Length: 371
Length: 92
Image (cartoon, rainbow over all chains, first blue to last red; front, side, top):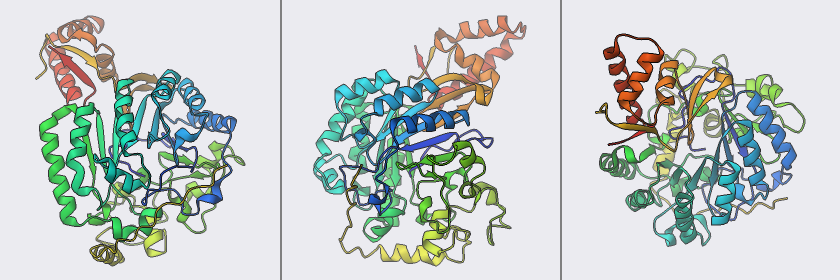
């Protein structure tokens, strides 16, 4: 999940401030970096409207403030307006995280009336043909048209650009488009390598030189635009010396509910073997958040091994990402291998070396069967 | 710098409201939350298209402060910072 600029500036005091509602894994796009699980068809039993309303109310009573409707493509849910209205009534700040493909001008007006506060639209390229190629569908023109419609409808807007080797050199025209549209926030989110993106890593990871060139483009744009537009640039963590403070700590402020009701401390948490993930259909959210073994698993620092356990930065980055440690070292209690102190750092360096020789074969995301 | 005759209002991308679970005012915006202290909330609640000088006068009166110079400096400093962060906008 891209997290740029989203580090909370207040301590959650043990509350799940951030609720991510993955309404469906259905999606007409086939992005080769999709963060959804690889076995999409195993999640075809979606929560009903009433079940979602119960989840929203329970999370709000636990202190949740920010709510992201995402997917898959959340606009494929016909009850999106009803869920937005209920969330607004409960006091959430409602965010819609969308590819824009199922949005129309009429629907934007209805969602606004229902209380939707802001829209995060993903866009891959200013050139529609390149955009189409990257997402495996002819939607590039529509995305740009719907970006205009979102601003015309009066929404604050985040333009989210998933950045890979295939578009990292084309950031400048996108920033010009954002400026022309009057977008408030641009999030240039280098991919994080989980799920489909991990399967395609050799083809997607940019080179260090590409990342540095993109950073220079961003610096120049920031200098030109000042406070009119906020540009977040998330560097790929593979090129860092220290891991990201993933999720601000496990079970600290983030709670994700998947289409089938599975509750997750982060959207990638299914990869951790042995983790018994609770489901909102069987347990109250309060028990899930406070007491379930999955949410307790990596809270605090008692689970840590060396080099994390005695590290003076452990309260800053929490040892990095548990899912990345699992995926790349086979043990979720290891330090995130991105860390230069990790004995497994070589797996990251090997991955960077391997990505210098892409073979041009991409595995595009499968289509979910749906309900 | 912010001046006393600037007109200040909250940016439309930011939602300012009381949040009982935090026992504080908060600013909510795309993917972000800011918890405000009481002073910041008093100032921001008045950023409704008023002149900065009027906000200073109101605060001095409401809190019965005689050292208006000190309040003025604090308000200007806070508003400058708030504008840098994008929370408020100024019209001439």
